[in-house]
Length: 275
Image 1 (cartoon, one colour):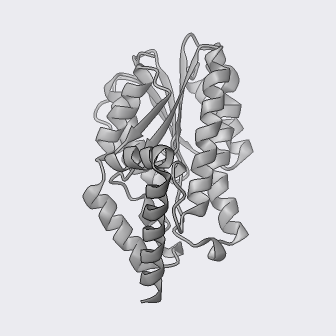
Image 2 (tube, one colour):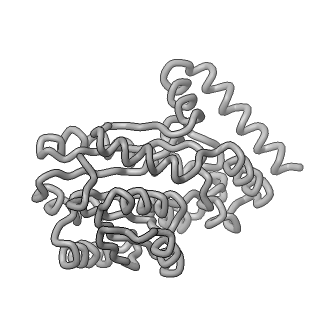
Image 3 (tube, one colour):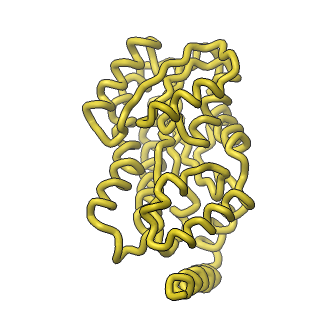
């Protein structure tokens, strides 16, 4: 799918680091973008970040977990833009909590955003994507869908669900000419961890993870370029960051190494929590 001034893209989580970078990359290519986020202030900063876009930009304050709001979003986008042919389900959160300390409300929260948010976008834009001359969907999974990480059970579970949902749609919607790409980023320099930092079991450990991501991660702008390029090349799956490639490899070809790696991570986390 070629990104042009005929493209109408819908980007959820547009107020965050990667979402903002995706909107900028699309705007730079002349696309029309519907920017979607629950945080009005963050969405405003994204609009300010876009430098003289040639395409039409619209802002939509929406909770992706809310079905009525997502239905209304679809109507608003079609009213404002006339069509939608690129859907990027980017909104997501992570909770750094052990399974035992995860409340059911925690599960409702993360499943609502990471999984139901994707399903809602796909469900309500389904007919519009199929009506477009060409269309594509991007679903943000994670390297955490390859290997289950300690203190990340809800994040891993929801991102694995997004991966398998995407592969199913890749086959099903491919018959309608709709491309589907699932993306597996490793560490990206964004503030996603900070958004739920105070909910962590171990705030100091969470801060360390954030510092590692800032030091080792890829810039959000570079990640956005890779994602949009994958859309243009109709890629089924892309991995971003060397750690994503490593996790994918060990999960498939080196199960003993995977076991040792995860055991080491879990043991280090246990020791830090007891310290």
